[in-house]
Picture 1 (tube, rainbow, N blue to C red):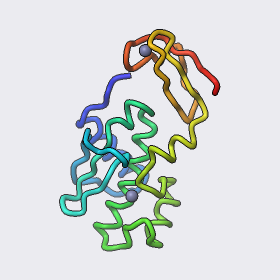
Picture 2 (spheres, helix red, strand yellow; picture 1 turned 90 degrees about the vertical axis):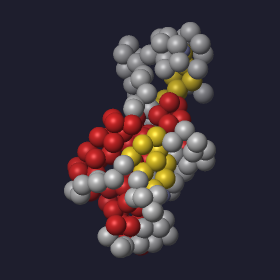
Picture 3 (cartoon, rainbow, N blue to C red; picture 1 turned 180 degrees about the horizontal axis):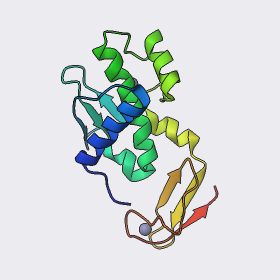
Picture 4 (cartoon, protein in one colour; picture 1 turned 45 degrees about the horizontal axis):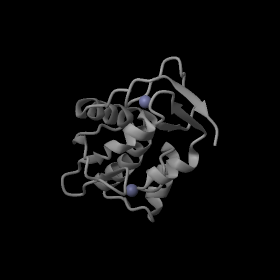
Length: 152
Ligand SMILES: [Zn+2]
Ligand SMILES: [Zn+2]
């Protein structure tokens, strides 16, 4: 598991915006290591999207994709002058339509959706995933050790 860089995050955000929202993402998406409680945030002033890089480290790409979807809901609604806050009707219907999580704290919501827990045979670190992964292909992000699925 290799950390996504900002370039790849930018491309990922642009492609999700295009395929899911049918609109271009024309601003910047980048990792911010200092985010603590949220998986990401949309900045009203710059229109940029910041993603917590712990999200990727702990939960993988699919968790980052979930946050990007959520932040893109804020982004597109805000730019179009529609209700872009969590409580707004526009926000609720767009997040439903795109399958984006409705809240900014997907670290917690992701946790609740975890179905598979993998443990590194070498260093013992745990990895949580919503979907099953191929443990013959995926290795530990910390030490490259082999993983095995564990059940709580
Ligand atoms: Zn939000
Ligand atoms: Zn390991």
